Image (cartoon, rainbow, N blue to C red):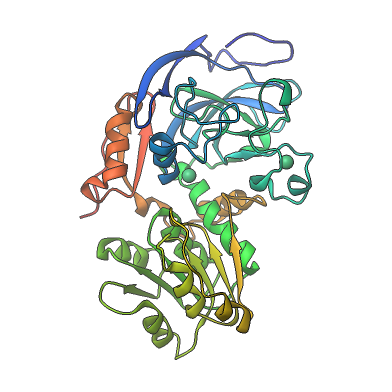
Length: 387
Ligand SMILES: [Zn+2]
Ligand SMILES: [Zn+2]
């Protein structure tokens, strides 16, 4: 790290000048290189990355490009380091930072909005109007590590303090990488209506966000919580995380099953995490009149939607991006209280040096991989899937 006025470090956590960092080359190609350790500026700290989880969005970025936007374009061959679901230890403080201390363990959320646009002022910093405007002459101060700025598949990264979440000692590195995923589920439920005690929720799609959506909904007192999906092993994990009922849509019609399980009525909320082409049309038939549907996933192609059904039944449709309104802090509060065990979705751990293998496990769902974590410091203990 380059020394700079006002930047503080500690002999207990020496910071080297350079680090190992994976960079994205052509689509699907990552290479391990050396990069300078970045220096924190005002309102930033330097985080030593201890663990980073692989997200489906990382696979999207590495193989297809969007939603990453580097210097206003595709992320390929720009010396860009992907990875965004990481945690670690604060090892240097930028000028004026007194909110965190060196040696403190933190996990991160992704979006440091510009802080000055209309949406940032509303707490919707994941929908910042200056997204990706953080380079050269157009520097608006926006950062989304792993999307518009360097991310976490490396040893150190700078983070705005507004993206940090302090974590308790009792929370493992692996569990801490899952806070942001639970934060996305929390944000979806926040946008759907906040406290959902006693109201009925369907979660469609048992990916990481869907599974933690079940956990968060149940922890918020929703009743019943119904999870739909196609893989029995993931539905079983959903039951362990608090689902009252699960529906394998290969065996029965999802809409009919939801109505049967909810006393013949539609539910109050649907959190759509499957991205299946017909998911919206099914979700709007799972909710009751005036119900709300949050879309946290999407299909790659455009799909026809039954608008008339939405209008006639006063159904609300929300799209969400990431985790706004400090939802990650609320998710961490639930997790540190052990209101649910997010580690049930963590299946594998690899060393940082083995990132290509880890990516392959996540992409091809080898050994029923759900969340694959990569750990620095050469800790390559593999946690096997539960079955
Ligand atoms: Zn993610
Ligand atoms: Zn903004």
